[in-house]
Amino acid sequence: MSTTLTDELIRIAKDAALAAEEARLEMLAASGRRAEAVFALSAQGMSVRKIAEVIGVSPSVSQRLLEKAKESRPHLTRREERVSYELHRAVAEKVREDPQPVLSKARTNLQKMASRAGDAHARGWVAEWTALVNGADLNRLVDAMLRPDERGIDLRQMTPFAGVLSQKERLVAIHKAARAP
Image (cartoon, rainbow, N blue to C red):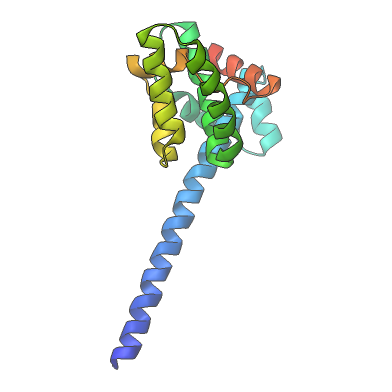
């Protein structure tokens, strides 16, 4: 076997592996979006059976998707923590889909927040958000937005993402929070 043929076959195998991995990741992302949509429908009051009917799956599949969405959330004991988490989860989805409008709004809000931040704690949160919003790593921003620990809870209390979600998106998030674990 010639070296050029061997090299070509290796390149084909590597390209196919990359394509397969990209497809696998997209399938996982699509599965997560589907589970979130099922959770949103349930949070709006639709039964598992009705959800199954309208999306064309069995009730057991619909139930598993609902459970998958709920299990992906941290256990937050206070209602306001769950609401804030769900709102930020919706914002995080917008960041993943089209980050620039979200980041632009956050930067505008951060400028206003910085001018009004009176105490050292508030200035610290503004500085942390500013670094995250202006950083190049969107995954780091999303991770910070959705941290389940006290730091994440505290960050979400002084959010720069006011005005990013529509009223409908806010209501869906609030309904999800009411049904989240």
